[in-house]
Image 1 (spheres, each protein chain N blue to C red):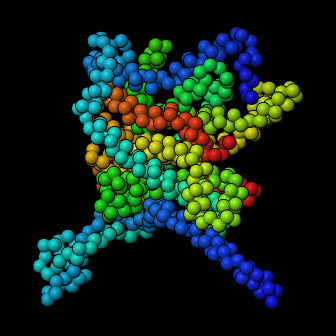
Image 2 (tube, rainbow over the protein chains, first blue to last red; image 1 turned 60 degrees about the vertical axis):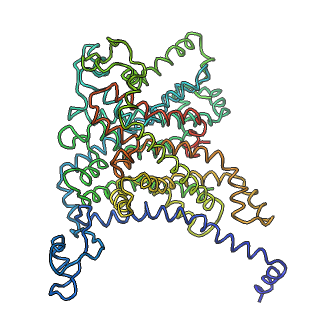
Image 3 (cartoon, helix red, strand yellow; image 1 turned 180 degrees about the vertical axis):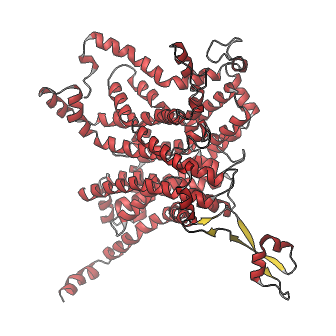
Length: 348
Length: 283
């Protein structure tokens, strides 16, 4: 009974709150709807579909569906089994619909991956990428410390140091391919000048991957640098002064006082570096196209693209299986990122 | 301030710093300077192996650039990039203003879940989407069209933009919205007249970022398009690479042209650009 007595005054005295509340309950969904539909269509559903396709053998094509014309001895099933030949068979006609040609193979794609040396090379290169890409973080920190001064023209210096990040990876790839040109490339000219032997970096099984990673580190380091420069701006000057009075300086100050305050910047740097390393596709395509030899510089992202869309045949199912593996690796990081965000939300 | 301001050091250190700074920049940008050097050299230099020396027949000035524009599909590629990038920028920012508002202002069941869905979706490797999205685009009759690329980019970028917008709106003073509600202003009008004007810096940041991301996209360009009529400049330049293999003077002029729009965007909107990149994590 108590609830009735507390409810009634609101209902009678002022009808607007109730209307407001229902409006407030519907509004977020209306605001979310267009983006949600779009995102579901192009991102969420495709992820599920990729898992599904990875259990099929599929060449990316559809075949026209046929049915039996009335009055013939053929059945619909027979027409379908005739497939493309049905078009020329008396008694069958196309229905106008297209049928997916994927063939269920269960775990076979994954079993094949297990025995595929190129898959393992790609995975191994992915690990190398992941490990070496982290150099961008200390590299970026180092440059940001070097540039965090107030001297004439500093703004321009900072922008120019950041420059590589704004360039397309395609351009970066081309730039570095020329930088590495055997004999005539600038790098080799320098090596020769100092009396070393010229090396064909992108043509060597040993060095090509490292050469590409070095090219990738160039813009990635610039990105980390800008994160740290922004972070350094926000470092609490009073804490620094206090620590200085206590006699802290140099590396000790950096480690115990500055770096903890830079943690948000470091966190973002880790996230973008991992994503950058796992998305490495452009540079490999531009610089070596997976070579030298068979897939020596390939990574999962590149190998997946190559098996699914290369002239050797469109193996969409096999490609999807590779994509699923790559996705699961990335999920580890995404889960970590979301977990941290969730913790921050609860804390806030 | 860390490290200690250079002005507090001895003159010797200060002078050294002033000298090292431009040298460091030069070394950092050497690969790029090399391309600029390539782009103004005559073609004969490369056939004769004179890659780095002073050009034998003098500099080409803008001749290489002119050749690229007049004799290749470059203008078409550039135009395609513009046609793809601008609508994507508006589309993704518009959608994410709405999602950011919904997720940042309202408390409802599943709020965090939907937010995380956008964030996670934004971080997935492209390859997991490749086969189905290519198929979907083909089924819609949009394979090898600019519209096909635009639609996908809008959808995908909305994930990143939502993360950014929602965090930005969260940081706005809630009292403003509460006050408007007390006044009886409808939710749509609150969005349009109260929140949207406050979102201007975030909108600017996202516009530059999306512009750069989409302009520089290569993967989706090669997956969803194939002809010069619809390919953006990143994919175009690789086709170009086949056409002009080893013609380094034209290739480098082409790469520089392709790089100019995002670079210009960055220099014009630097403050917003950097604010966007730091995802609002570093205030």
